[in-house]
Image (cartoon, rainbow, N blue to C red; front, side):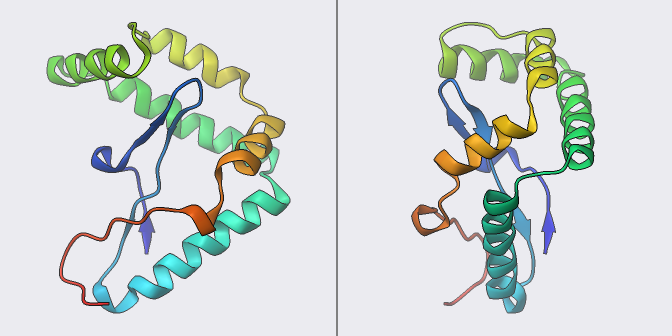
Length: 130
């Protein structure tokens, strides 16, 4: 499956940010996509991330934050989400500043606390009978 962010599936954790996984696949590959995704989560929880992986993730997230504020509608959506989730406006600059402070240890701590595949919720959209 292809992993990519999808705004409808974002989870917001107060003081922790958003965490989401989106896997797009055909119905015949759904079980494999879920198995692979959970396997990667377990591996990441066990082994952490490399410095190279963290740098690449930060680059991608930085681009998402910057490009996610290009249109007036996107800016309004982001402002509304910020106020609803955190009770205040969090600027793109503040988000980017926080992103630069994330370390490999932070990712490991997050994974340890939140990445329990046995407690995961899954939403399947489309034609699937399972």
